[in-house]
Amino acid sequence: MKRPNLRRTILSIVGVLAVYGILLAIMVYFEEESPRSSIHTVQDAIWYLAETLTTVGYGDVLPVTYWGRMIGFIFLLSSLGAYGLIIGQIANFMSTLKEQKELGLNGTQFTKHVIIVGWNDFAQSVIGHLVAAGRQVAVITKDRSSIDIIREYYPDDKVYTLYTDYSNFDLLEKANIREATIVFINLNDDTEKLVYIINIKKRFQDLNCVVTLDNGNLKSTFQNAGVTYAISKNEISSKLLASYIYEPDVAILSEELIAYAHEDHEYDMKEFLITGNNPMIGMPYEKAFFDLKKQSNVILFGLVRINEGKRILYKNPSINLAIQDGDYLIMLMDRKGQDKLKRLFNIEEGV
Image 1 (cartoon, rainbow, N blue to C red):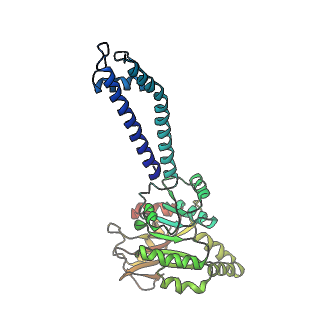
Image 2 (cartoon, rainbow, N blue to C red; image 1 turned 30 degrees about the vertical axis):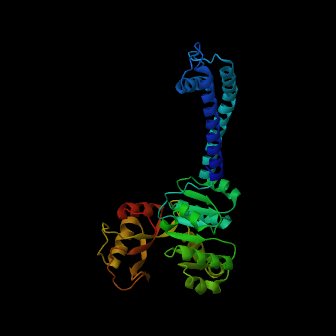
Image 3 (cartoon, one colour; image 1 turned 90 degrees about the vertical axis):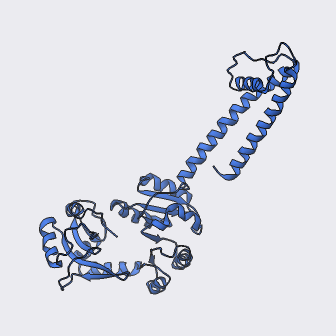
C-alpha cells in the first residue's frame, strides 16, 4: 500500500478506536449503577459492542439506562459505517497490491537475465528472439500503456516489466539489475544513450551494457564510456544489403543464422560453455569438429577462450587447440542438433 494511504488509514482507525473507547467508558459509567443492567465492566461493554457491530445480537448483554441506550443506538448505526470502512479498505488494499504487481514494484527473482531499458517495436522484436531462445527478460519502461501490451504477449515467468523513470536507479534494483547478464540500453538517440550509460555505470560499475548506434563513428566513444558491445545499425544493414546484391544466397543464410531457429529445418549459430563435466575437455579441436558433425550434425567453426578477463575468438583455428574448461564452442546447427547438444553438454546456450 502507498505510504500516504497507509498513514491516513492508520489515523482513521486510531480515531475510530478512540471514539469507541470514550463511548464505552461513558456507557459503563451510566450502566454499572443500575441494578437491572447487565453491563458492569468494560469487558461487558466491549462484548456488547462486538455483538452490535457484527449484527449478531445475542441479547445476553443490554443497556437499560437512557444514556446507555443512546450510546447503543450510536453503536447500531455506526455498524453500517464500520462495515463500509472495512470493505472499502480491503478493496483498496487489494487494488493497490494488484497495481504494484502490474507495475513491477514487487520486484523479480530473475538471475542471469537480460534487461532492456526502453520499450518500442525494436525492443519487442529483440524480446521475441530472446524468449524463443529460453532467456528471461526484464523490461524497464516509462510508458504505462506498454505494460498491458507486454503482459499480453509474454508470460510472467519469461518477461518481467518495471514501470519507472529510467533515471530512478534505486527502483532498477527491483529488476535485480546486479544479477543481470547484460543490459540493453534502448533509448531514443545516441546522445541520450551515452549520457545514460555514463550515469548508470557510476551506480553499477560492473554492469555489462550493449547499445545500437545510429552513428557508427561513435562506437569508440561508447566503448570508452564502459559499453561492452556497441553495434552500428547502419553498418550491419549496409553489409547485409551489399551481400544481398552480390551474393543473395549467403545473405539469406546469414540473416537466418543470426536469429533463433524456430523450426526444425532452420539453422542457427550458437555458443555453448564447456564446463567441468563436459566429455570434450582436453579433446583436440580437430577431433571435436569431426565428432560433433558425426554425432549431432553440428559444424564447429570457432572457439572463444577467456584470458585475463578478455575474450579471445579463434575463428576456425588451423592450430590444433585442445579444448579447455571454460572455453566456448561456436557452432552451426539445426533444432535437432541443438537438442542433442543440450543433452551432451548439460547446459543452455549462451554466455
